[in-house]
Structure formats: C-alpha cells, structure tokens
Image (cartoon, rainbow, N blue to C red; front, side):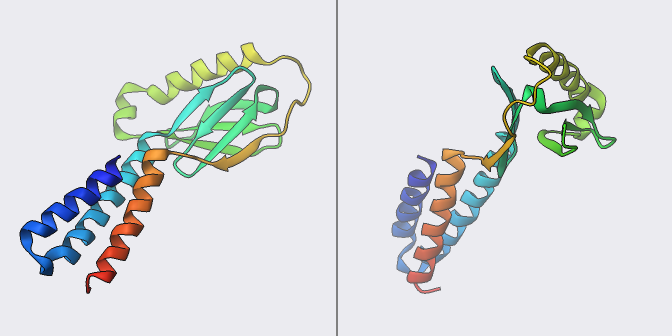
Length: 161
C-alpha cells in the first residue's frame, strides 16, 4: 500500500512540475521508501514465545529454537539480549539492543527475566528436540517497499537521469 501510494505521489508531483522533474521525484521517492523499509525492519524485531519454541525475529533473519535446545537467556554488557543454544551459538535479539533509554528503564533485564522463566516452564523434557532453524524474516510492508525502491530507480533511469 505504501509503495503504491509512493508511486502515485511521484506521478502526481511529476505532473505538476513538468516532465523535466520526473526523474528527481522518482529518486526522492526511492530514498523515502528506503528509509521506510529500514525503519520497518528495525521496528519489527521481536522475541516470540511460541508453544514449543522461542523465535527471535531480527531485521533480516529469524531464528526458531525449541525450548529444549536453549541453554540460557542472558544479556551482553552492551545491553543486547542473547539466547544461547546447547551448541553454544549466541543469537542476539535486535529488538533488545541495549539502547540509551534501556540504560534507565532496564527493559532488557526485565525481558531476560520473563523469557528465562517462560523457557524453564515450557521445556518438556531433557531431550534434544528439533534442530534450531534460521530463515529470512518476511515483512510484507518492508519487502513491498523494497520492490518500490527498485521500481522508482528503474523509472529514474528510464526518465533520463
């Protein structure tokens, strides 16, 4: 929706300014959509406590770890929340990245405490469980905006810049 609105705005602004300005409008729209895509990816980072697994959704990759495979939940000195697997792999959560505000509020410490309690409660057994998986983080708004960036850049090239 944001991509279509951006392209419609670029067409409307270009029609008001004349044909010489279409290329510049497309470039500005591409830059605006890049900012929106970046912001959306950062703001959609989160930790999900599922029924049988914990998911860490970061801007590009998502990690799905069965509760049985989690060794501990901790916090780095920088304030980033870490999920440590039995294999020793550390999965950092961008959603709890140790911001300046977190220094005063302590949201990462609170999240570590709550998540650790839930992981301990939801472990079924001492068994190994499924293998942790890594996949691309699908965000329809950010991905369509990225497609809009490509369309705007293509139109920018076609219109003479």
